[in-house]
Amino acid sequence: MRLMRKAMSSVVPALACLTVLVSAPLARANSLDPNLIDYDCGGAGCSGTIMETGTADTAFSTTGIHVHELGAPGPGPNEGKPFTLTFDTSTKSITLTGPVTLTGTITKVDESDFSPVDVLILGVAFPSLPAAYATFFGSTAAVGLSVSVFLQSDGTVTSSDTTVTGKPASEASTISLLGLVLLGGLWVRRKQLFA
Image (cartoon, rainbow, N blue to C red):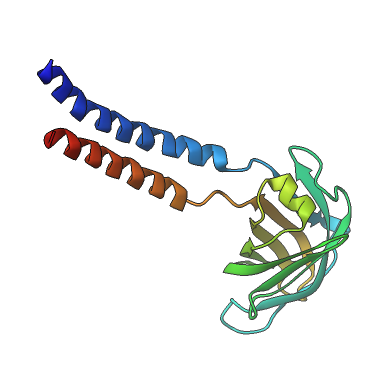
């Protein structure tokens, strides 16, 4: 009986740790919100210009690119409504203005030259969302990726696509949970060794 109890005292903490390690990636995968909102334009329906304001291929701005909202898998809060996309990489600001305003921070700038066009890719963080968007995403913050194609000759935008998704849950909670399980396992093991 004592041998059985000793064997179980080692197995239970090990199983608890294994359960947390296996379930953490699953919880993380399920915390990614599949909803997204796309703001896009293309061809003749696209208007606006992008200006390069430096020589390092990192300073770009626009006074406005006209886009429309499209939510997936269902309709977004302002489905089909027009928005104006403005950004300035030197101040790291990006804004989508329409029935509501989404204001974000540019986190990454990447420009590629495919003469006669340039492709500008911006990584974006939206730290706070209007209520309808927070409900749609199930999150009060969001992340995004903005891709614009424009002519090198005059900056005319030929295509623009900004995708916004709900921000995934923080990994801090998973790490805290793992730490608590490990401490609990050590405490149980200590109690059993000194009992």
